[in-house]
Length: 530
Image (spheres, rainbow, N blue to C red):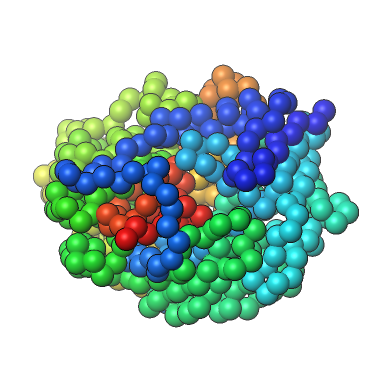
C-alpha cells in the first residue's frame, strides 16, 4: 500500500489525501500542546506579522554558546550556532512548520510503502546548489551515506537505514531495517541536511540554503550573504546574517537594547524582565521538550549505585526552580524525557518532589558516606549551574557532600558531558520521541550520556517506531518512561522554554517546536523593518 504527501507550489507543503495524513498527525500530537505559543510583547509595541515583508538588511544574532568546535558539517552539529548554520546554508528533504506538522522541503512529495519499511521521496525541480549545480538524487544518497560510513552524531538514526538509492533522476528510495512511520520527520533533522555529492570542505560549505557562506571563523563569527539562486521565489528577504557569541547574559541584553544586535538567544533571570519591559525589544517564548539535566553514568562508580542516584533525584525543589530560575517559562519534569500534558505521557509514575527524608533514606542505603561527589556543570548547559546549586544546598542537609564543579564551555562536550559520573547535559527537542530515544537512550548510542543499557528499552524503541496506533504506542512509551524513571539515570526537574530577546525591527519569527530563534530558520521567514 502506498500513502503519499505532496507539496503545493508556492507553499512550504500540504498534506494530500491518504493514510499518511493521519499517521503524520499522530506523530506530531506530541507537539500539539506546544503549537501556538505566544510572542510576548512590550507595551505599546506592535509586531504585526501581516506587515508586507521588506527586502534588505543584515540581521545580527548573538548566541550564548561558543566553541572552537563550531562546524558547518551537518554530521557534527550539536550547538545552537551549528543549527543556525545548518538552516542558513542547507535544506533537508522535509521540515516542520509552526503547527508541528511535517512538510516537504527539498522533497516535492514522499510516500510510504511496505508498512513503513520503504519510503520514496521525489525531489523538487530547479533547485541549485550555491555553485550553480543542480540538485540530483545522488546528492541525497551521498548526504545520508556519510552518516553510515563515517563518524556522525546522527549515526544512531542512520543505523535504521538499510539502503538509500537513486530512482531515476528525480527520486530517492530509503529501505529501512525496521518500519518507521515517523521517517519523514527523521530526514528533516539538521544533521540530514543535503550536501553536494562528494563535497567535504566545510570551511566553504556548498548547500542549497537561503544564504551562501561569507565568513566562517569557529568560536568567533559566522556570516552569510543572500543566495541569488534560492529555489524559493522572493526569499530570503535579508541581504545576509551575522552570528557572534556573547556568553554573558547581561552583555547580550545590553547589546540587544542598544541596537547592536537583533536577536539574543537564551535569556535568563533578570534579563527576561529587562527585555519584557523594554520598548525596543520583546520576548520570543517557545515552549519545548528540550532537556536540561544532570545525567549519571550508570556503569561507572560512584553513580553506578542506584540508591545514590535515587537520593539525588529527591534533592531539588522543582517548583521553586521553575518559578525563581526559569521565571515560570517551563513545564515540570519527572526525570525522563516525556513532557506532562502531551500524548504518551505516563501519569501513573509518581511526580518526584523535594523529599529530604526519602533522599536521606536512599543515601544511607547507598553506603556512600562522607565521600565527595562531583557534579560537573557548565554554562554550555543552560541552567545547569542553578540546578546543581539547588541540589548542593539540599544535599548538605542530609549529610551528602556534593561538590559543584563549573567547567568552561569550550571543550565541555568532548571532555566532560557523558564522560564523568555526574555531568550536566542538554538535548534539543527532537520532532519525535522515537528520534530522541534512539539518539539518547539506546544502549549503543554514542549520545547515551547515562550509559543506561537495557535490552528491553531498545526493543520498546523499535516497537514504538513501527506502531502507528496511538493507544498502542502510548503503552509502549509508558513502559519506556518507567524504565528510565526507575533507573534514576538523570535529574531532570523541568522542560525549560526557549526565551529569546528580539528587536522590534525583526518581523516574521514565530515560536517553533524544534528550537529557539524561530526554529533557527531566519533565512526563510525573517525580515527587518525600517
